[in-house]
Amino acid sequence: MREIKEKEFHNLIEWVTTIDSKVKKIMSVSRGKLTAEQQLLTFKNVTYSNFLAALLRLLDARVLTKNLQIAGLSLLRKIVEVENKEMSTPAADWDTEDWVHSKRIITLKQDSMI
Image (cartoon, rainbow, N blue to C red; front, side, top):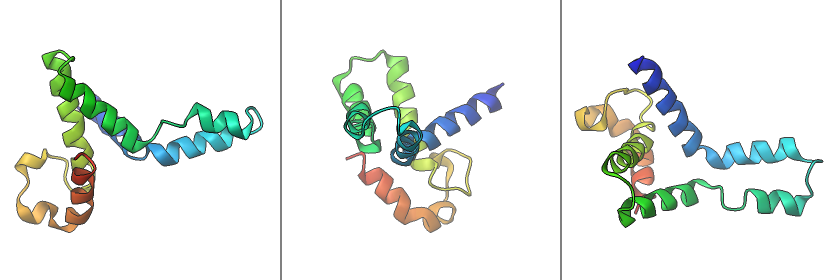
């Protein structure tokens, strides 16, 4: 059961980190049902950077319960970890050689959280 939950969490993170392309795909499928202007308004704020900014604001405002704050921090950690395709363990357990090949993309993800 734990493995299933971890896989679902991983899939959620993959979806969030590629949300911009996912929204474009959804938009292309919905063409014809909505005008171009309606499509833009429907998903205007659904972007990776907006999602991340909203999550960081929620965590910073301290309006979430302690368990939800921990879950939010886990989301942020996993967003960075998912960029290292070769590792499935938490980043805290990585040795330098475990992530150095993904350093550029990991740094970009970490910087997007600032």
